[in-house]
Image 1 (spheres, rainbow, N blue to C red):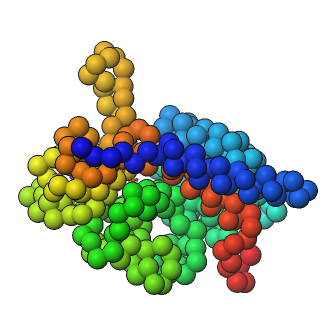
Image 2 (cartoon, rainbow, N blue to C red; image 1 turned 180 degrees about the vertical axis):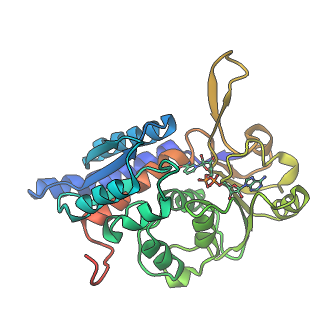
Length: 304
Ligand code: NAD
């Protein structure tokens, strides 16, 4: 049965490396990196995600600030708030927790964040640069997926990869990573990459997954990937997170991924659990991006 790719352990390792660098910075007398998170409204999942980011920042020595705004805020007011934070020299990394309320355009918000502070990598400038192999802030979840694949030790070079999900912030950038030419930098995978989505018919999805050496699924559809759909030895990265009723504890809920873990782990060579898989590594990658922002590692000529 499959070997577990332990997200918690990997996250800890990444955070310890960030912490060591932050310690060096503060020991030299400089201020530590600062991450500012804007949270609009009080979506319960968002509140949990933000608190995980704050905890990780604390662990690494990165200072953080959460700016909570009411869900009645207008788009204009929110954009003004972002402009203030863009200009604040004490803010290195800046992110607006998504989703924003439906009366606010997500694209306007993502593009308002200054590219050099955009630690989520959702600004069009960073997305575009990522696509053309220029140095950029890479979104944390796709970066986490690549990190976990790398740590499995299995090479993606020339292999078949299937990505389930095509969202702009998750599925698409995962596919960009996997298909790209490593020779051009950006840690790309050199895999033959297929993107499946909600309009991929089930029989076609199975056709592709059966031929896949790597399956990365980011849909939020529990049990989308079952044992009969995969080949022996596949590497499975489960990005999905869905809260469902817990059959073993009445009136309680639990988190599950997109993969039938029990079945698929009988055939896979490596697999990530949910929870304790991609989630914690994502948060660790955000800390890494915040450190990069502090060091002004990714330059935007004429924009800073
Ligand atoms: P989304 O709703 O924007 O996108 C879901 C995608 O799944 C869409 O592209 C859709 O076409 C595809 N899809 C739906 N049904 C499908 C099917 N039957 N077959 C193939 N594809 C199908 O969601 P998102 O923001 O991309 O997030 C995806 C999942 O990943 C969610 O469960 C989310 O909670 C989770 N997530 C996890 C992390 C993490 O750090 N682990 C981060 C972000 C999102």
